[in-house]
Length: 433
Image (tube, rainbow, N blue to C red; front, side):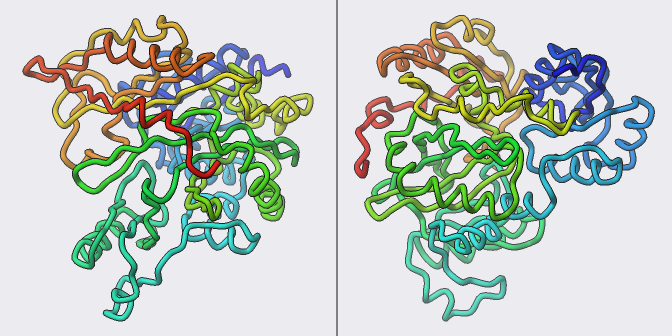
């Protein structure tokens, strides 16, 4: 597909978007990035950049005019996905998703309604309104998780074990919701469930399971929970294909998905799989790096092509998706730092040289400050790495090498990096395979 000379606007200039800009430049595309952060990483490599908020649609339209933009790419951000949609509607660009589809797969309540409509199992929830009654509170079976219906990065989420915690968590969730709504769901504890993420690729109506991974979670002291390692392929791969894949594909067809990528999150036990969240966009976990490296399917590149031409590729690439990763093992890991201000970073330039590390995306830089409010959210993430290996031992050695080489120092010279990898727990045989 010849894209040389095409001009593409990137909505956002984060570290993850920098990989997309590099890909576009390799294709001969003229790249323009916009971001309110003057030091956003993608600005250093793009052909041109603008200091402007991605929410300033009128300002972006002027840039599209002056730069003669041919298409727009929003990448990994749910918030920027909506800005890009508005921009494409007003400027008649190409977008692989409709607003209705984005809403269904971004709004947690709408997504679960959609799942129920297509007989796809989802996490049980309790009916609790903003002006909740005592009867509603009495109906709760603890523990539960309270979350905004439309937030991201773990913001506004609380795990509650009693009524007092629930009453405190509800306004916190509402404050983080764009539409002011929330859910109270059964808490899928690791004692009773295992956590997984599934990724799908879609091209010209052809739907393929790209991968499914097991998520290793850690708990923070403020009742928040995040994953620190995503392990591929999931031990539940075969069971997921048997029990869930057909229904999910029918659901995607039912809401008219033609092109793009979808990620799904949920839990599993002996009774079945239960979904709680989805996204119709590239996932912040950058799972596409593995599919590109192992299966030769670069969904990020394909979406760049679609933004400019309306086609993801010249031929059907879905036949090459292999969720078993051709027998290899992979780890998508997050490195967290504790509260404080980053004064200096050492060893970050050596990580990609470690055997098995195919990608290292630094998310924070010197001068970044992690506050108490950031603890237990993805704002606490210093970096994300992608590792591929032929065995568990190889994978473990690669992760240990990162932790040993990398130093993130605060103003007192103390290391802020947290070692959140318990390898014995990470690689335990799953209970309900």
